[in-house]
Image 1: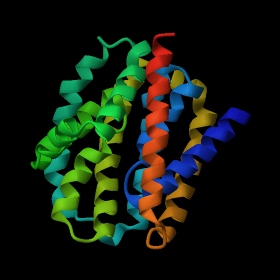
Image 2 (image 1 turned 45 degrees about the horizontal axis):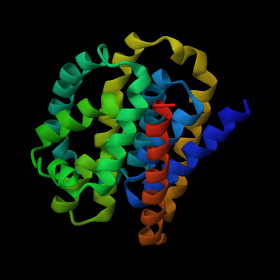
Image 3 (image 1 turned 45 degrees about the vertical axis):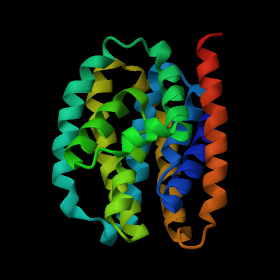
Length: 238
């Protein structure tokens, strides 16, 4: 139970970060979870928690969402779920932390990879890749953010619309993982605590968004993500 409340506090903190700067919270959470829970539960519990975090963030910033961008993203998300969902049955859950850690490091520090991810301007492709890859590596929010920041001039619009995109991506995971594992039902208390922490974090973070020093916060997030990603990669080979 103490671990449950610790993860609830972590869910609050990561949701707070995402609500303030628009990204980083989900990636930080996906990097921390393997330390506490079984590999097979990492992406399902992360997905459920992020539904609560992103949906609540979108509700708290409802008037800023650019709804006209959603249809193309939704079509792409459905296609991504169907295509990438088949891969899950061939992927040993033991190596999921390795995939997550590698993705985090490449996304943070390998410019060609980041440029490759950022070149897909179509929201159909953004939906397909963000949702499809999210089934395997968990946190792919920066994919849509790279495009939204080019198209939208308001930071609040970027954060709110990205939150809706990520809600759709995480919702698409749940049916797939309900077929993969029944262990979720045994973690119901943990899930509820993390969901409540995420919603509270979104509320407080939305209030603080315009007051935070984003530059220092982003630098700290990148450092923590790098250390946690390295820990996840090395842990697989122990």
